[in-house]
Length: 114
Length: 114
Image 1 (cartoon, chains in turn cyan, purple):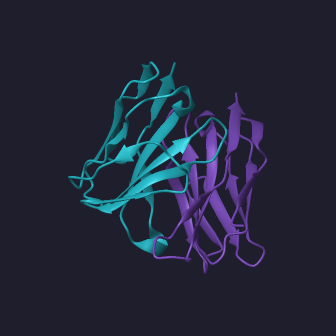
Image 2 (cartoon, rainbow over the protein chains, first blue to last red):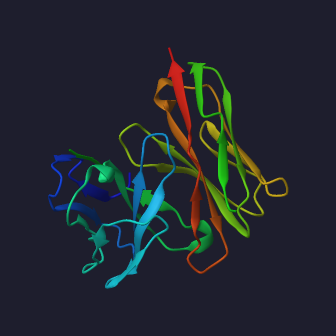
C-alpha cells in the first residue's frame, strides 16, 4: 500500500471559487506528479516536480498551478474554478530509478464544479 | 505519433474464468511497459513492469507478456475473482528524454460476475 494521500476525496464547488487539492507522500520521493483523468479516458499529465522548488507544466494545458516547498507536499490550486475543470485529479510520486521507475498513485480527488 | 492502444475497451467474464487483455503501442524509443490496476474511485496500482529484454513477468494470477519487435503486450488473468473487477491500464515509457515520458492507454474495464 502506497503512502500517498489526497484530500479532499470529493469536492463540489461553485464556479469562480478558489480551490486547493492537497497531496502528501511519506516515502521521501523526489518526483511528484499531477494527472487529470476523465471517465473512460487516459491519464493526462498536468504538472510535475523533480524536487523542492522545481515545478513544470505537463502535456495537458491546465489553468491550475502547483508548488513544491517541501519534499512530501505537492498541492494543486485552481484560482477560479469552472465547470470545464470537473474531473478526477490523481497525484503520484516515484522513486526515480528510470528503467524500473514505478509511480505510486494517491486515491484521487473527484471535483465537480457547478 | 506515440500512442498506446488497448483492447477490448470493456470485458465481462464469469468468476473463475481466464482472460487476456491486449496493449499495442507505437512509442519509440521504448524504455519499459507497465500494467496498472485501477479500482473504481481509486488511483492506479502497479502490477508489473517490463523492460526491453523481458518478455514475460508474473505477479500472482497476473502474467504480462511483451513482444518488443511487434510492440505488443498482453495481460493474462488466471482464475478470475470478483476483486479483479477494475480498469487495467497499459503505460509505456520512452527513452526520448531524461524525463522518461509516460504514455497511458485508456484502459480495459473488466467486470467479473459471480
